[in-house]
Length: 315
Ligand SMILES: [Zn+2]
Image 1 (cartoon, helix red, strand yellow):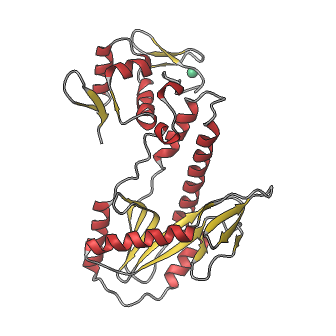
Image 2 (cartoon, protein in one colour; image 1 turned 45 degrees about the vertical axis):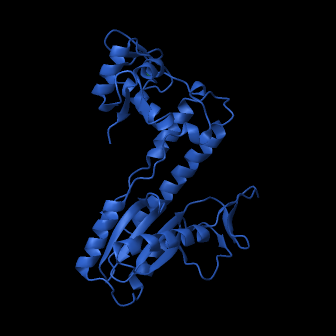
Image 3 (tube, protein in one colour; image 1 turned 135 degrees about the vertical axis):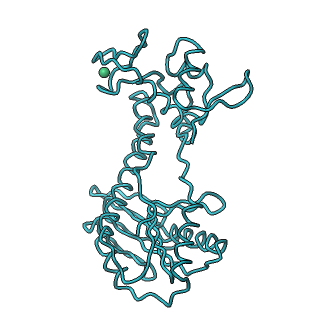
């Protein structure tokens, strides 16, 4: 039974907004684009695993949590977690193009691209070992110290994997269902009730990974980010404020709430709060009063005393 479903990662929308607001020749544009491609590929791989586990019906009780993360001090991000009465499975999906070479001493993952170029990523084995240790620490706090097994999932069967260490379990997405279903689990440690209680503890402890704001992570200043309201239809034009609405300078679309997206871009890119002056400047509103009304109407919450008042997005 799935008790937490995967959603499209918000960072994909964040990177897209970032690309839209950086000038075409900005030196960090390609780094943002690489991150976007990486995030899209990662999500694509995870969705592939979800599809492969859609008919998962093993002969043992289980709970699945997709896209699970815990904040500090645990700092865990797991693509898919399977809780059972005897153990916990951590599944980490890799969707990287090219031939994947597992290197050791020191550990790394080297994807070899079609043109022969080699990249280097943190070894998924190291990643899984870290996640296992942190998960052990978290399980200890729950009073259910069940053993943990980790599996590296290769999203596409066409990916060639070389030199995977024998101690590591590396499967293609299509194999996972069969592997887990056929597995003879050790004797149960938890009762069914305890398993469900543990599932609830996991759900309560989950906290979405904080990807935002993006600009400081790329050391990009506010002055380098194009302000204004972009047209939601043609995506090319900037919207101009008329008396009652916004109008696209290119396709002439008229919209009353096109500026909501710009406000969302602010929170994804720049910082988690905004004041009325920043709102006027970034969105192109004419008065502080208009900005205040817009921020309140957009569901933002005022924080701080009058002079230093700023607004944050309501969770
Ligand atoms: Zn337009």
